[in-house]
Length: 328
Image 1 (cartoon, one colour):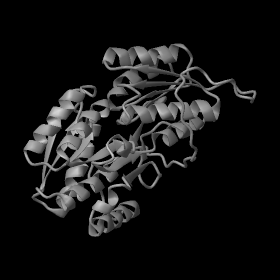
Image 2 (tube, rainbow, N blue to C red):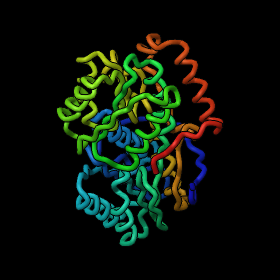
Image 3 (cartoon, one colour):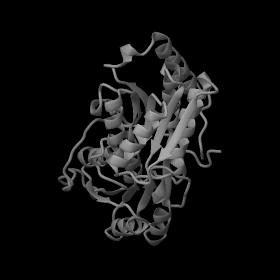
């Protein structure tokens, strides 16, 4: 049940940068917005953390905000990072992942003037809310592609740390595949971290040895190991969170994509205009945040019947006539 879900009207803007230095002060008389970001891994991962960084830079470039970023991998670092932003008088602080919820709630009690946003989760307080990206709606479509195009009847999914938000996308992938073939075999592996490229590569090779000829990952930086293995074995795979087709254009058929930068800018606008209201904010295809993006180079290798079926199901998901399962 979507308790306190907020219907979002999002702005569509485009920008991206790489400099952490604050932007020049805004030309308006209002104080400069201060926005911080904690990511669980490198912003150079080409996926989950990279899109959060892009969102922070859009806030900086489009709103004249002062921004700061910290990489935080442990609960102690989550706490320290959020408290640092609160103590420095930041207006808004993002924790990029399900795992930041407890730290956000603790910091929220200490710094009531700072709004703490986690990009997943269920925890809500007067100045704490999660944005829940319904990536499942795109991973369900990836499952359909895998089941219709597989020659072995087997696929694999590889995660980093076992988190409910990641397991949920795997649940949807499996449901999409088994909507085509109830006996389709989806095997799941978690490597235990988001950084070990070698472990992700070995996990992928193991799945390939077991017959999987499609792979979906939620491994952040370690996803590069998935793509390396798929390229070596010439088996097809999917990108996640960002259009990753450029990382392995010969094997990535499509990507389950999130427009996190657009959502970040929206939340910053709510805080700046003092219209933020706490609640779980669900963002999916209907809000323009989630999409399946084909690799146009490989799309012609997919059967026209599969492409047509994916388009049909996507329309049904957008219309609400197909309910994609979630794991939490």
